[in-house]
Amino acid sequence: RKEVEQDPGPFNVPEGATVAFNCTYSNSASQSFFWYRQDCRKEPKLLMSVYSSGNEDGRFTAQLNRASQYISLLIRDSKLSDSATYLCVVRKAAGNKLTFGGGTRVLVKP
Amino acid sequence: GAGVSQTPSNKVTEKGKYVELRCDPISGHTALYWYRQSLGQGPEFLIYFQGTGAADDSGLPNDRFFAVRPEGSVSTLKIQRTERGDSAVYLCASSQGTSNYGYTFGSGTRLTVV
Image (tube, rainbow over all chains, first blue to last red; front, side, top):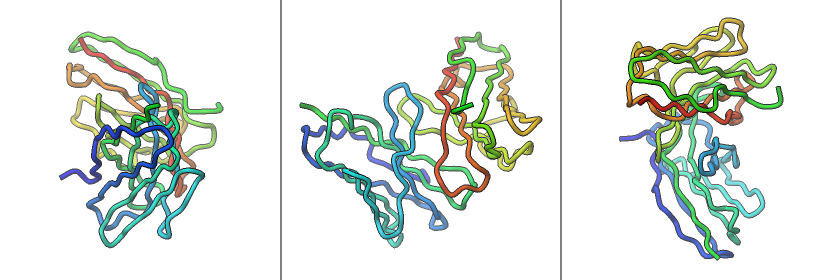
């Protein structure tokens, strides 16, 4: 079983709609959680950290459920430019390696 | 420099040859990470340096892979006797030591073994 699992998608989303997807992690010792965004043939870029109480950054909302060991990302009012692969990332301790999921592909269509 | 720099951006090599991939991290970042990403997959951890020493090399797939960071800045990933299965994008990232934030990736080296 992979340490971080994601639905690969693609999630086909009409422009302006809301999309949400989860990822699950198997290591209960994980302490830090992130969402990265990766465009085709580009490097991953940090989208947002995920905090225990949940957090928002503009149209993006991230949630963490430690009991069930999953993280979610919700995108409101989807834009064409939101089309990308979203990578779920966990880390056991500060300074340690990040462990990536396989990514969820999102396609926003007009 | 302003960001993480990786060279070359593309490398095509013949099976069995030796290759070196270079990473120049963000100035002042003490932690440096190497990842490998195959098509349709997430980045897979290879090795992590804290300063000059390898703090965790558990992701190196076999002894054909080796990485160094002799002066605590630039790092070189070395692959001996390349195989077609080594074809992937090799990503380097850096961060400020034990920062609890995510880290910044370079644009990667696309390695193709023919």
